[in-house]
Length: 223
Image (cartoon, rainbow, N blue to C red; front, side, top):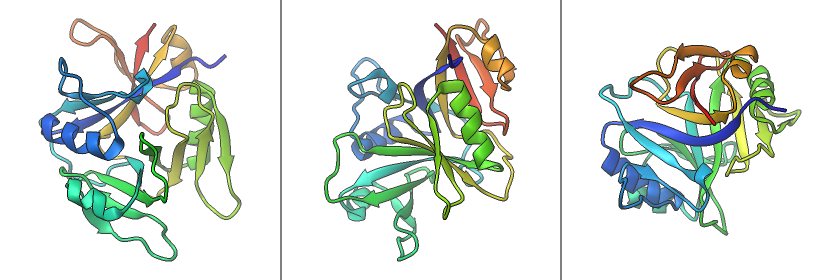
C-alpha cells in the first residue's frame, strides 16, 4: 500500500485574482464565490490553490503545467506570452503566464473541458524521481527508449493523465512556485520512504511541509 495519495496543486503568485482569472480560463476551472483564491473542478483533485507570496519569480520554474489548447492564439488572448514557439522537433509552444511562470501549450483538434494535460518536474535524476513518487503515491512508471524523460500513469486520484520527470543539468536552487499536496494516514511512512520534513504542522498551518529526495516541496495532510 502506498503511504500517500495525490490531493491537489498549489501555485505561488503575487496577484491571486489575476492568476485565478487567467488559469481558470486556460484550464477550464472556476473560482467559488466564497473563496476567490482557489480554482475548482468537478472532483476535489482538480483544485488549484493560488497562494499569495511576497517574493517574485527569479529563476526558471522547475515545476510547470502542460495544457491542451485549440490554438496558441487562444492562450495569447487570455494573457499568455510566447517564450519559445513550436518547431518540427518541438511539438509544443513554451509560454509564460501573466507573472512569468512557464507552461507549455499543445494544440489539439479536440480540446477537453478540463485542459490540464500533465504536471512536469525538472529533475537531476528523472528515473529515480519517477520511481520514488510511484512508491509514494502509486501509479506506473513509463518511458520510451528514444526520450530521456520518465512519467507516471494511472496514479490514484491524479485528475490528469501524466506526471512527467524531465532531466535537466541544473540543480534546484530556490523554493518551487508550483507544488502538490498529498493526503496520508500518517506522516512517518512518508518520511520512511525518503521524504524530508521541512516544517511540521503547528498552530499556524494545518499540514506538514516536506521535500522529496531532490528537494521539491510538497505538503502532507493527515486524514
